[in-house]
Length: 514
RNA sequence: GGCUCGUUCGUCUAGGGGUUAGGACGCAAGAUUUUCAUUCUUGUAACACGGGUUCGAUUCCCGUACGGGCUACCA
Image (cartoon, rainbow, N blue to C red; front, side, top):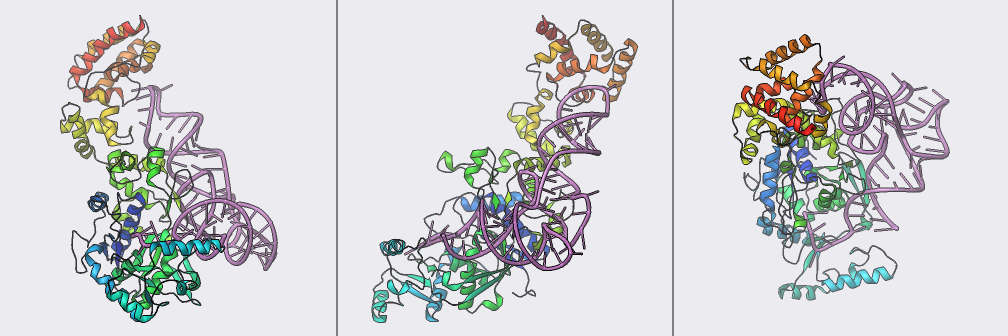
């Protein structure tokens, strides 16, 4: 840990499918930390498991980060001085260091086949060990360069027999880790297993690859999920074995994001189970079960998602709730990250979205919903759209709801709330409407304030209240009792449409009530 | 089971040896007398339990309970 080194952090997802929302939060905290300290945010693709590789996953990761405004400074696309940034392209590198560990006595070759390992586990279980592991207790009973005759080992290697390299962990040591979030954590070496470093296909495991790459890429802080905490002791031992302990990065293990109903960490299955998105973007997998709706497609503003995610496990210690990325960067510190897992609260996410929606200029919203409006075959005139958004944005949760909830701005009223019509359509109502329509003809320009003044004076003349006519206007214009102020609605609708709807409504209301 | 991390309103959290334990979401009520929404006001509701330490613990320590993570030639 050397605080004088320039901050370099990495987000290192595995391209095995869509990037989970928890991964996005990890990326976010990394970005926040890097930017706060004028450092560099690196994306590294950990594709060392060829069996789990999913085509398209890397593109998805990139697109998801971009959408959230978390694009990396260095990575497979942007390049950088420490590439390549895909582990599969660094394959040769890892063997060299694994061999170095063997030579220095920190690792060894192992020739055990899968059935050997299974037999070992079975044997140990029979003996009353519920969690058998390949460690110092049993390695001399297995087939490896520690237990076998050196000549035999050399022979097998020369003959090209499959082998792996394992980390040799000797008992009797205490490994102390100072986690930036959790403080001191201690592990005893005799409890640790001899982790595989290099697999028989020549690829490194995560443990090997992440140490080599973090070192070579000069990573200063490893900010990752709590699921990695228990293997951190192995990682420390690897840094030691390689002689890199002096520049070992600091560790910060993030609390996990938990299921909405409590038990366990949030998983992709919870999305379908609760009808909520748990991925940033939609993903089409091979099966329907493996396909998911994203926050983006659900209608979320990326700023709202980021803001929401930032507060899942962290808070600034003030009462401010709304932060853009810049403000988050300013306020962010690792020591304010929580230790315990945070439940995924979708209601809160929606609240954030509405806050963002209301704060978004209506002209921007207009541009966002224009394609949706056009898709319904309605004209998407920017100024008109902006007027509609102005009236609707505080009444919906998502921008995409505007053309749905406010469909009556674009098309004739499709149906009336008949219950309300019956309740409000009184014998004298017809006269009032007709009289007001009459007077409305003369209003020019057709502005809300003038409309209101006119109606008001009419009502005063007749000694009646708004309640006698306005609900009917609302029903006539929109069909529903929900919506913006009647006069604002009329202004946006325009004189022609407003009056036409009022006319038709009179006949419709009579019919409904007959 | 072993190792390890954690535990303040239903949820996200602030706080921290002596506080009316604060805010936000949600929920409920009221106001803004045209709806819905927004906004505002009010209400609802929490320190897991048991021992210590202390004049005093929600706060510090130790247990217990409960929960999370890890326990693959996956990351």
